[in-house]
Length: 361
Image (cartoon, rainbow, N blue to C red; front, side, top):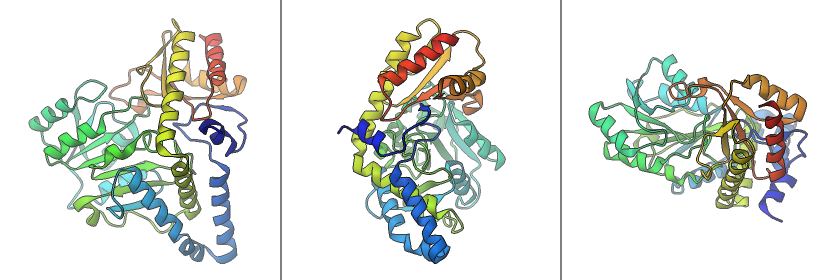
């Protein structure tokens, strides 16, 4: 049985054509059972006893996160949080000394991350350059104006470009600047060992790992590990953390390299098919063979994209995302339609989407 079949058979049958994994993946039976079993233990034995009994499961999950980031066994601290956004907020609020005065980031930074920085009163500086990061642009920016830290969103919410994170982190290391990485769209999707030299990496359960919503993680290494304390709140949905542990275990069993290759193949198949089928009415934003499963479509003519997304669900049973400009306000000039299948996405699925879009273009 190939990985695509395994992925499909290990989770409940879909009742909609789900092309929205970048928003929330479809959890497996193993994840659902792990969450349910922990909730039953809480009812049978009490919440605090059940949480204590889950300690080994959660420690294994921390070890797997370290390994997927390319960190050595026991390196740094891995804490569970409510979400990726919560992770960024907790890291900044506990930054050694005081809040960073200036955070440097690329132009394509994720809008909600910018909102967190704004809410906390942290200043920002934009590293100008092409959409695909240019390490030399970062070096020039740091020479002109030195920030307190650098924040990098590895794979955006608004376009499926896999950024050269390791190369940019190396530039930051050379400048002796701390680096915080948003890996929410990257973790479980692409090879994340490129984050091995980052100081802080955070991510979420609900996207490509297809774990429960409302759970995330933050990993801290180096000198910051001992200074960024109390990142993990004890009052939390422990069942969700156990579900994340089950999703991680499944990802490791499937084989991360095989999952990454499978998702890249799904993305390439989707882009090539849509570029040909929708030629003249839609543009595919990414390079056709970009090694991610996130596919971004931009209409050539004015369309009500929120309305189209709703109509695709109601009339065609197809789930996508309308990516508004708030996702990357410094880079996006117009909304786009995001298509993000997972390992079980077939050519027939993509053809169904192409037909539905062609009818409305």
